[in-house]
Amino acid sequence: MAGKVYFVGAGPGDPELITVKGQRLLGAADLVVWTDSLVSPELLQWVRADARVLGSSAMDLNAIMAELIPAAQAGQTVVRLHTGDPAMYGAILEQMVRLNAAGVSYEVVPGVSSVFAAAAALGAELTVPELAQTVILTRLEGRTPVPELEQLRLLAAHRTTLVLYLSAGMMQRVAAELQVGGYPPDTPVAVVRRASWPDQQVLRGTLADIAATAAAAGIRNHALILVGPALDPTLPTAGPPGNSRLYDRDFAHGRRRAAGPNREG
Image (cartoon, rainbow, N blue to C red; front, top):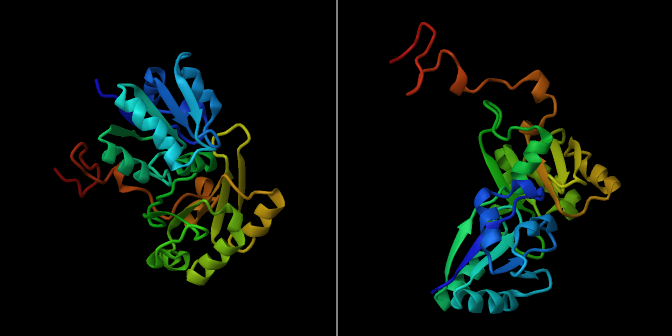
């Protein structure tokens, strides 16, 4: 009987943020290869005592595949446990290519990305009516190149909500590139380190001062940078420029009639 590899999103850190399906698969797995440098070890409480558990932080792609492929071919249930959601900077495509070449079945189980845990920590809505209706998820170019059309200063021209992964150690460059691209110096910025973990850190500022604030706090990794008008910390009290039409009493849709003089349906 053929086995299967499951790429499971572990969520951002809090072990309770794994999905029900992800937890169930951990309990069913014969082999778990987990991202031990980023995933909470508390998630291993659901793994069977007789299962093999391997941390991937010291393994390269060949070593990982040398575990996943033979186990699945032997009929075992294999969980490759990734941080956050596997689709975001999870390096799963290269693993899928190897599994396809070996004829091994696999499935991706989504998880809660750190961007959403960070937004929750900030009490922020990333898509605010009449302020920001687009969210860009990206990173600053470092050792891994970024396509020319995705250079940060070009993305900044949209001046919407922008979230940067893997860039906290280059905060000064981030702030400079975004301002060159069009964000004003007083644009609100938030930095969330280890979102949803017990030692979570939250910093707020603007593009003009966030680099110095983050340096003073010693933040260089495991942090997201969130930029844009939707990150204005006064919004939860002052309110947005306009409210969503979804709950407007004068807005009709397939489930509700409008209450005002212009009601439809």
